[in-house]
Image (cartoon, rainbow, N blue to C red; front, side, top):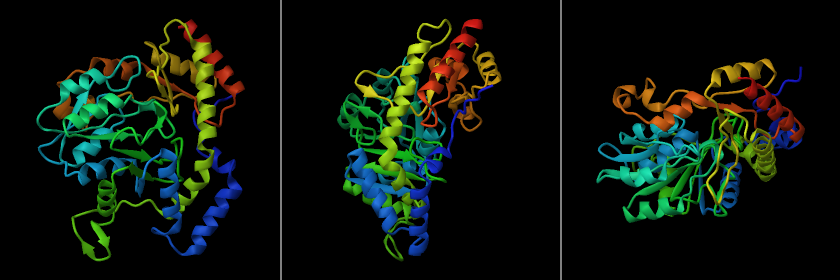
Length: 369
């Protein structure tokens, strides 16, 4: 039986092994293992890729969301609007500053934050809006940015899953005032360990993030604020620099795979396919379909050699981390998504022939349920 991996994190190493090994040797021989030329080069390259002026490499994707909030002085007594349907890191970033997450339910079509609900959630305590480009599908941000600026709010994109995605021709990362990216190994642009970056056109914000990530210091042993330690190490930066020129080709392949799934699975009874907002292009970090008999579908697909995953089966407001504060609240669309969502294989490790075979198996199994 043919088996289809959900993800192959080693693919980007094996396909670029000679370049990766050379990058490793350069950094190891340089003797510079914190900061230095490899990190500076990647920051410049990634800022240019996103179309932004500044990039600050940080320790992980969570810190890439926490640090801009802290840089703007957001903390206890403040509110930050977040999607109800998202990975828990979005909420954790807000709570770690001492601010209050204010969840807004999902749009049932895109599964991203319901744009109409954002305006209704703004209060005098609101300091920021944090849309998430979930599964790689961008939230249209033109209206959100106008809304944020009308209320003097920070619009911070959670772009952890959306590197290379676009809205109106602009890449994720420059749709708001700043953005946080994750380079976790499973991401479309993944390191071989944890890593993240903050991207922005705001020089003051970039400087504050860099200072906060380096013990609150711009000059060694001069600590202007109580910062922390959250730095992208140069070895990971060097690996990311090798991968970055290949990212658009990998994203194009993801889009072709998604198009196969869309075509073959259209109109299959019981399946709800992911949709993207008009004018946007998803990076297809994940292909998340929905089915009321999700568990049976997953079990049958695994038995047929199609690896599947759940993103994210427990709504944040019902998780142990937040149930005491938010468990009394109801977000019906989010709850329905979490109950029915199923992610099928996606990534450049798959050929279009693989995609056709996977889609045919999904269609056959779904028809039998």
